[in-house]
Length: 338
Figure 1 (cartoon, rainbow, N blue to C red):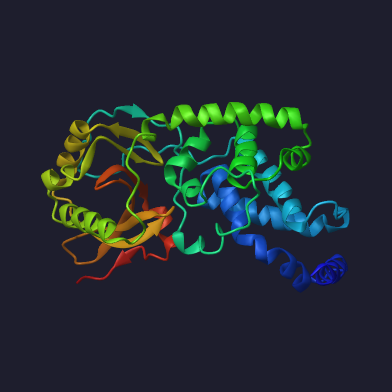
Figure 2 (tube, rainbow, N blue to C red):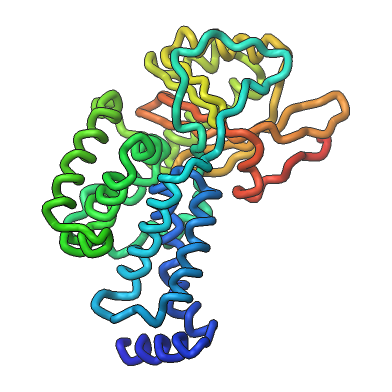
């Protein structure tokens, strides 16, 4: 294996693009997920991944072989993501854009308006990776919307350290080398990052776990949600929610928490006469749906993507993304009339 890698490296350094792809392609999926965890945006992660591969191609001459190709690529990717986190070009907030619907006063305004979902279709093989012995999170947990959102409010360097140490299990010395830092600095940043993450996720600590992927209990709950939402039945929908249910809708900053205010939001939406058809998919390891607005013409236009967070036999969160994310899931912008 080492001889094969050495041969590929020699050929790649000589300008062989196929050899370079053979070296990097096995790590492409996990690097994309790493960039997504760092940035919270699928599109930003794709851009950072392309920047990483370009930088790796150009920097092959500087690869000294002290670490593995995988570790070297993670170093480059982390640097690119830190640069992106520090830039001022994140996706801006949008105004409420649902015609003929007057929303209730939000509980608060969210700050992570650049959040985007990650298609489950791209997770296969990308989170089933070799982890270091010090990894503390299940890979599926560490791609959830709640986890990725919590990362976005931490300082960039703390995010990098927490992902590299607790999610991927790199040793402190490896992370220090990746970040041109010291082990002491890495350990200090990790301690602060863990504390910040605990504060942001404290409300979820006592919740029942979500039902297993594609289990009968998950399927039953999802089917009830689809029936309630497609029929525009706010009472049936609210009956599926936890008391502290949380609704967000990036890039709109409006956030709603609690069954009462969420009930008023859905009553306003359904009261306007809006009805949608839901097309199932999955995002971030969670049930998701493309939402298509019924129209008198028969053509149903995509209005967004819903991602559900489940706990026990209830829905504890729902995130509504705008229709710009539909193509990432292989979903069309519109559906023909039925």
